[in-house]
Length: 168
Image (cartoon, rainbow, N blue to C red; front, side, top):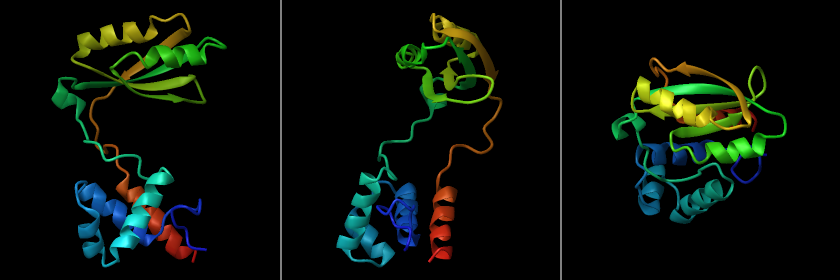
């Protein structure tokens, strides 16, 4: 069976082409999408609906650069959490606007969060706010020097679509 959205098996080539087109032109309409992809409008709409309902496409919001907002410093903090305090720490970190992401992890720490700050000095204020919570035992912070491979999804989409062709 082909790995189409909705089957729980990933995406196929058409799904990949839809995602790629939306990544390049997020404001494109379904009619223009169908014309460019050479498929019926109903097919394009059904695929788009399925990709959204399955959580493959999570949104169409603007891509915002924290540095352009005045937050040019990025850091990652590995947090060690007191046993049984995970939910409270999550709730605390959700109130800190400079915490862009939070992941629970295995390894030396329990959580990894991506932080931004206005400067290195401001990063200290952000870290103090993050760790100023009783459930956080220890934090180790690493400042990002450069980001040579920014977050990207399209190469993964292309690989998933190509994989579906090999499994036909």
